[in-house]
Length: 291
Length: 200
Ligand code: SF4
Ligand code: SF4
Image (cartoon, rainbow over all chains, first blue to last red; front, side, top):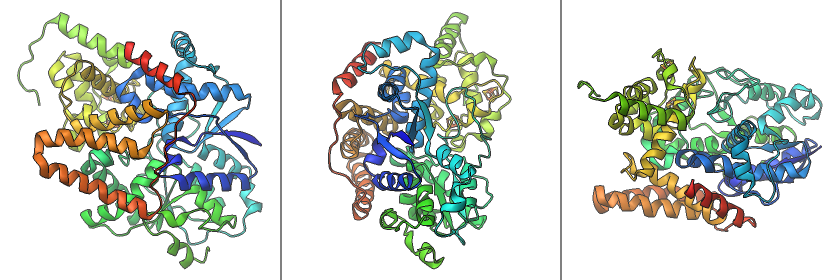
């Protein structure tokens, strides 16, 4: 199945590993990814905090290009890009004047036809269809992940229908169970890790993350799993500092869901670039005989 | 917080409330102070002010307090308040609006580093159409350290630089630092959009 793929700036830079493994894993799962041609920055949270027009217009350029391909769906791994694109599409559907204003500056106009999917929706649907029941080369026995969703793929700045329980989503748990892992039940799966504040207000984001790490460890998790590159980088890069500061156990590796699927489908952890995590993440997989 | 008796004229109050409501797209007057938003706001411990308080300040026309409190600047846009509010009021959008209003009036942001961060991000996007992390962090450091210099002197600047450099080295070790610059072909479109935004 051919599907458009929007990597976004983070996957093009510090989370390149996520781009690499998404391509490997999705291809293995039978998707054929077509990178969105000449894609540009979605504006992330910064645009919405500084300029209302750009917050809608920057994602819109990408939506226009996607609409013009004539393909049905676009998959977006980064929660922030996903949220901005979806919100832009919904706002433009309701505001014809704004849509005209933006379209007058664009080469490829927004039509509003493309279906925007977060990578988790795609993976969870496949899982529910029973895909993993046949395709696994090994079961992820012994992995007890705390499934971490974060903010931006569960909650939106406008009123929107969402097809899951916003306080207790289950998509990632479903995939983990299908892969043979045993996700823990915990309380902070949709709490904010303060990703953008890590650079400019680290005290705040460290405090937010300390609660997340503490609860995961107390519930018996031996790792985190997420689909958001901001959450992954934040929890991964600063975890050692945080557990030191707050006297917490750990550190726990922070895996991407694509890494779980890759390992379960027999892909080498080095091809998936799991060795590029900040918290050492290969030994747990070795201890559990998963690689 | 504001315990003094509020002095305001009805006219002044109404214009401020109207402006914030219209620009944020939120019906502030629907708020009945149930504080469901406050219970879930992750930054409340740090800011003192919770979303319900902020809304009250705006409704009461307390323009100063409403623009000068830490919630507006420290809000992490987690959208918990709006998702849980029985009246669908998204305080994150109100915070965004108040920040934009402060920027337009060239008021000194209460948290300069946070303002510098978002400013640098947008500047980097306007240069290449994509965020090049090296450039973005460079722009941010220049802006933030200028502000640090004014407030904390050289030692504050050095502390800030050291913290960022430490992360940079860790990133490099794990091959997570990228020095290539990517620039999109449709830069003319991006420029036009930024121009439009500037004009309004
Ligand atoms: S949850 Fe909504 S109605 Fe209740 S206090 Fe907060 S903003 Fe007001
Ligand atoms: S969006 Fe901002 S104000 Fe609302 S709960 Fe999150 S941090 Fe608090």
